[in-house]
Length: 267
Image 1 (tube, rainbow, N blue to C red):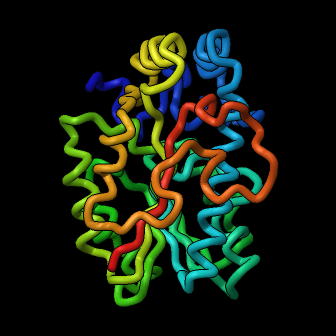
Image 2 (image 1 turned 45 degrees about the horizontal axis):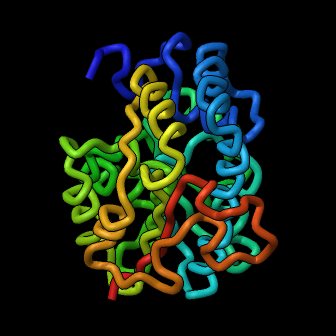
Image 3 (image 1 turned 60 degrees about the vertical axis):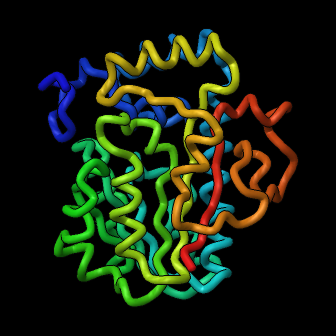
């Protein structure tokens, strides 16, 4: 990886995957390089803006499902810039005082998260960590302090695994997390796929080559394979709007969301 693209090194001239996502959501925590890169994607796939909102909506539905299933602690890796409907806010609508650890490696994300989440008190923790090094996340003193790994945990990997290359061993990363989670824990995952909108796939992949992380799109069977060791809950791995929708689809047909998602339970 080029040194300028190493996580934790801030360069406003290099598009950031977190700030691109912020731009798609209509946020203001982005720079000219991010906006230029995002507009290249939007030129061929304008539905990406709606897809980003669908991804946030899926996260909210999944968190509520986990909380209703008895999960009160969450490990959100690759959290991105804070926005409305953060995990601790959504979980708190179902359970009292959920414990949430937010993990990211983008310095802008970390600064904003610590500032904006400070008001939530000791119910939230913000940790610098790299998904490619799961042992460091699991062993981080603040994670160990906040999360009781003797009780079920909700592991949230939402729109992050598609920035993990095969060389980074995605199966090994997930295996490390899975082995650390007790029975009754859940994996919530959403992942971009190359099975829809070939023009958008080609442009998106090209744009993200110059960003802080490349875009690695996978097929449905490959994404289903990431749930090894977890029992998929209904309806399995589906397009974002299809996972237990609680409102009218924003995108028709649902594959225009460009992202597949699912929730698995460790037994």
